[in-house]
View 1: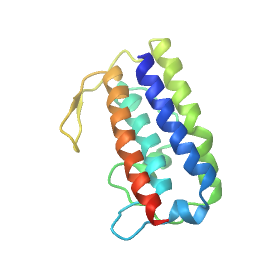
View 2 (view 1 turned 90 degrees about the horizontal axis):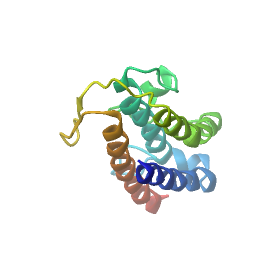
View 3 (view 1 turned 120 degrees about the vertical axis):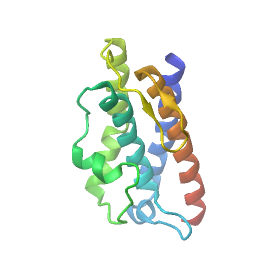
Length: 152
């Protein structure tokens, strides 16, 4: 588990660099040929992590339903994310991760609703696998962000 947590932290640190070094306009820009932007990708990763680990474990998520709705799979960015929302995403980038780490240490994830991902067909059977799959997922979105930045 320690390695999985370190991987998450590494990816989140990469996300933080974008949040700190790109303008609001850059974060909101969806380049031609892309279906999303930097800020949507980061918000989407947080929403997905909460859904995969907490919701599938039958536990309350640590973000609002509105946040999940805005950044869930299949949603699209509006290109109008304001600075307040960016600041909120920045504030939960690590606190959401720390809460998961704490809840794993407390053995909070007892139940789990098995889930087969639509994107890969991979079946997640427990919260540990959800954490591990989420790292793969966040890595994919980091790659997308790295592609987007070439056009900003």
